[in-house]
Every structure is written in C-alpha cells, then in structure tokens.
Length: 408
Image 1: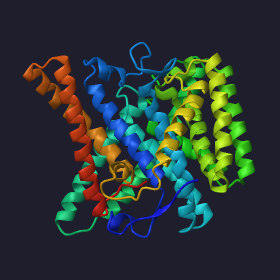
Image 2 (image 1 turned 120 degrees about the vertical axis):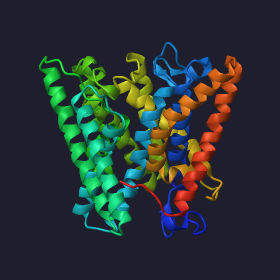
Image 3 (image 1 turned 60 degrees about the vertical axis):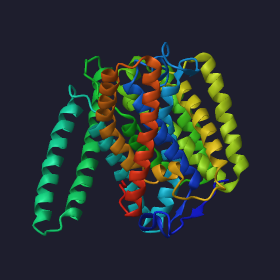
Image 4 (image 1 turned 90 degrees about the horizontal axis):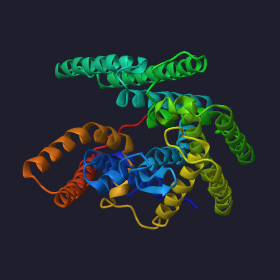
C-alpha cells in the first residue's frame, strides 16, 4: 500500500504547501540521486580498487550482483523505475488542472523534453546529435546572456526565456528521436553510421512516450498491455542480433523499448497497489520468476539492455523500493536527506552533472599533491563524498524553501 502525506507547511513551504506527496517515491528518488552522486564520485577515483568495483560496467572488474550484472548497472534502471512510479500521479495531478487531451499532450512534450535534456547533457561530439547539441548549447547560453542583459535594464524576460527553452528542448528531443530512428534504419540496411549517443534520460523520455497510449486503460487492459509489451520485447531480442543494440549507448532506441517495459511495469505496479497491495505483490512475483528463468538462458547485458537485464533490473529496483516503503510511517522533516534530494530531483541531477567533474579534478590534484597511499586516498575520497552529499542537500534545501524548483 502506498502511503501519502500532506506536506508540513514549515518544510519547503513555498514549493510544496497544499500538495500531497508520496514519501516512499520521494525517498526512493533521493536514494537514487545519493547513489548516483556516490557512483559518479567513485568514477573519478578508479585508481582505488574499491571504487573501481562500484564505478564500472565491466563484469571482469566490477562487483557483480548477478553474473554479468554489475552494481554500477543499477543506476539507469532505478531511474527509469522511479519515473514510472511517479508517472501515474503526474497524470492524475494534470487531470485536476486541465482536460484529458491537454494532459496527454503535456506528458508527450515532457517526454520529448526529457530526451532533449539527455541529448544536451550526454552527447558524443562526433555524431549528428553531438553537432546539434553543441550548437544548441551555444544558442541557449547566448540567449540566456541576452535575457540577463535585458533583465538588468528592468525588463521581465524570465517567462519568455523559459517558454523558449521549453519549446527548444521539446524540438531537440523530437529531432534526436528522428535521428535515432533514421540511424537504426540505415544500420539495418547495412550502411555504417556513427550511432546516436543515447543517454539514460533519453530512455526515460522515450519510455514516457511509449506509456502514454496505455495510461487511460482499465487495470485489466493494462495487465494485458504489460504482457503484450513483454512478448514484444522478447521477440525483439530473439529476432534482432544483439549487435543492433550494442552499437548504441544504453541499447539505443531499440534498448529504450526495454527501459519502456521497465517503466510500464512500475506504472502498472502503482495501479495494482492502489486497488490491492497483494495484487502488486503477485505481479512482482510473476516478473521475478520470469527474470530468473530468463537469466538461466541469457546473461544480463547493460550495453544491450537485453530481456534478462530488464527483468532482473525490475527485481532489484522493486526490492529496493519495498525497503524504502518500510519508512513511510516516518514523518517528513528537514533532516530527511533523501526526501530533500528527491523533491527537486531534476535540479540535483543537473547540478551534479556539472560539478562532479571539476570537484573530482580538485580532489585528485589534492591526493597527488599530498602523495597519499591507496588507503588514505580512499578515506579522503569517502570523506569528500560525504561532505559533497551534505553540502548538496543543504543547498537544495535552501532552494526548496525559496520555491526554486526545476520541473518538466
């Protein structure tokens, strides 16, 4: 059963007063971001053996949860899973404010904007999307500077800036999707292509778009939809060579159907849990059994996002979510680090993406300057990681209280 709490007006008043939140989803999202920060920091210190275990996808070097499944492989699927959990509530919230057709349109544009952000943050400079990304980043920076100059003269251009930014991101997401489809067609035709860089955020946006046709179905029809999508992705894995998946990052557009399946499972779980928590447990048990059957015949592959990887990712993601739900009875307060991070997740994600690299360079330079051995280097890195998470939490908490949030 999913617990809902009314937000304490003393906690994040500007941003969350008069809203009903799901503590377990907020904490789960916050846990994901904390893990992402930890994994990202560990990636900077791979020369320390322990950190390499949790910061690589290479099964020969990583700490494995299952054969072929590294602990570092958990990041993207948990991101997709928690997005699927919140998808239902987002749609219900939109229906209270606007007609159904407009709500579906908002979700569609939100999906394309997510793909656009994923393309901007994680692009390869040597492919078509990378060239467009660099151009678009430059245009956004120039436009932002112009808006700041106009604002300094007393003109209020904030709303105009965000409208243009949203439209641009949606258009960019549509362009990335089109290029991804074109890439797949050319590759299938035997024409060598560089391959569109496809990030986890792109997969989340694509998953959202794929799930839109199912969002208004009855529960029974959603279960049928889950079965049909499962069979569809299994057939893709059986009929299409894995080379078509591994040619692109995160499985590319084909692999995104796998992430869409995981997203849809999470979405269906919420619907089942709202009706009867035991139904959601039965659904999860069936998928878990299927996951271990699939692992017996196919090694999970993060690079291909194959069928067994999707199902085992569901098992791990749901198991962690069950643990997080055990803390639903705890009242939300400002010392709840996971909730603070989870309620402004997009802002945390963007901040972390931009500051991790320079911080990593500074810490590495400090380690080199001090000439520390591996043990002391590891201790210093752990201390820096903890301080980084606490600093990020404090910063986000202050922004939350001021009502500053990034939403799609």
